[in-house]
Amino acid sequence: MASTSVCPRCEQSPETPLHLLQDCYHSWLIWDSTNSLPEDFFQLDLDPWNKLIFEVQRIPPLTITQQASKLALETEIAFEAKATLALKTPRWVSWTLPPQDFLKLNTDGSHDDNLGNAAARGLLRDQCGHWHHGFPMNVGITTSFLAKLWGCREGLKLTISLGVQQLILEIDSLLAIQLIQSQKSKVFQLQIPPDFFSSQFRNLGISRIMAAIAVQHLAQSITCHAWSPDHSMIAFCPNNNEVHISKLMQEKWEKVHVLQKHDQIVSGIDWSAKSNQIVTVSHDRNSYVWNQEGTEWVPTLVILRLNRAALCVQWSPKENKFAVGSGAKTVCICYYEQENNWWVSKLIRKKHDSSVTSVAWHPNNIFLATTSTDGKCRVFSTFIKGVDTRESNSGTPDSKFGEQIIQLDLSFSWAFGVKWSPSGNTLAYVGHNSMIYFVDDVGPSPLAQNVVLRNLPLRDVLFVSEKMVIGVGFDCNPMVFAAGETGIWSFIRCLGERKIASSPSKQGSQFSEAFGKLYGQSKHGLSNDTVEPSGGQGVIHENCINCIMPLKEGEGTRVMRFSTSGLDGKVAIWDLENQEDLSNYL
Image (cartoon, rainbow, N blue to C red; front, top):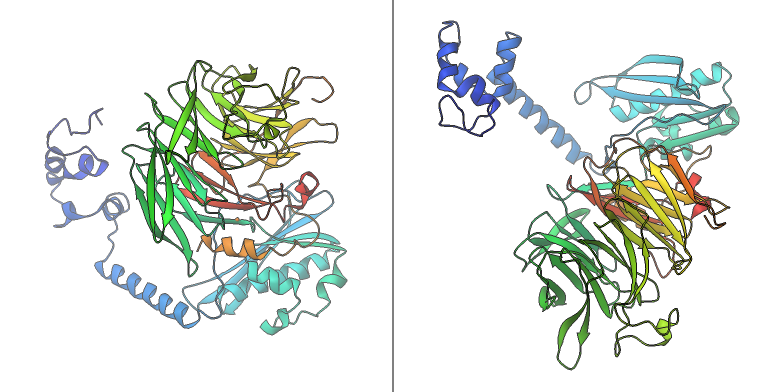
């Protein structure tokens, strides 16, 4: 195939694989010379065409009608039984090793067509992942769900006969787990005694892989996203000049508003938690503050005075100003002038040597951290007379607007995703060299640490507590970093690689259930430069994760849930409440 999009032989049509093999006039001459082709050969789609060429088989036209009839019958059965059917949430997952001295039992069941012959099977593996025992069984005419339960029963009988005392049962049905844990399996005529589980196993952990995650595919690609104060609506940019607002209605996310004012890609969105205002910035060098008036969102233009694209935006903690990073090597601090009834901006100039990729406000509402493609992280004072008070500027009472507090030269590559800890004592940011940096005691004598990843670099981070950070980026999988008792930061694991505890997980809160409908979850003066293994490609996201947002409940500093979005167009909700191995860091 040529480098251009036009076929070099006929010079008439785009050079697609189907055109090259079938539609091109010169290809047609070659096929026609065989004198053994059916009449409709050149009207076939690629799949039946390949089947005819390579397997010498034809797909009968009646097959499509039969498949449609079968799907219609399945739909009718589903609607008739909708009162008893559980909402399915399929997910790609990776198998993880059981803890030491445990065995892991994986079981599943399936059936042919709607109510066909069902079968179950199971596999028992040790702590090294080696095969221990397995079993198949013919269940008979039943549903897939009942086949799963029969698989659990047969697998547990096998483990009892082997004398297994420490077992993890792993299945992909939340309803099956709930029935087993509530010991109500007798309603399905499985003949399991009420005390079967508690009496037979000393330690039995029952897990549903990735049960804390909800996923929704909202667009082909998502640039950024933000949540409404009550988390009932989400605003996101589908990689164009629009901002879409979707709302959860009747267990489905419906698009309720489209904000259209920018001329180029929207690069940043932030939704204020107190005033319910949305601020957006774009590559068109403009910013708008959106206020809801009735059922409409009304924009107000913010004069940024930029000659390059605006790249990021964030409201300050008190929401009386917001910061905009740009490709013009400047940062705009925007605030509202009551007397003139408009938004104005003050610029921090001549401090950066390249584009400002991210901004983060300190909890004191004065300090602002920035990262840049010049590889540096900086902290500035943004004190504005008449907007801020001296009490809020208690950290540095004499600092003026635009004064640089500190410059961190830790990265020798592009820097991204700066964030402050809830207390403001620790700063974290990432570099394009697959490193993440943690800085304590930001000031004249900071204490810095590095954690080096083996795989692809990160793009953004989020403090969920003082001792734990979530990083996201090109590996498509959220990574957990935590500080130990000595204050040394290290990589813990990827959230897609769930470590299962030896006791049943806690029930999720109403908040988790609501978001489940989305798919429809060195301080001692020493330098710490450690190399940590990172996880592989993600099991939820299929492309780079470029945005991570907290989902906080109340006024607490801990973040138990957060959302991620990426270039694959997916928004995922992650719940840390049931991640028992991470509870010490929360």
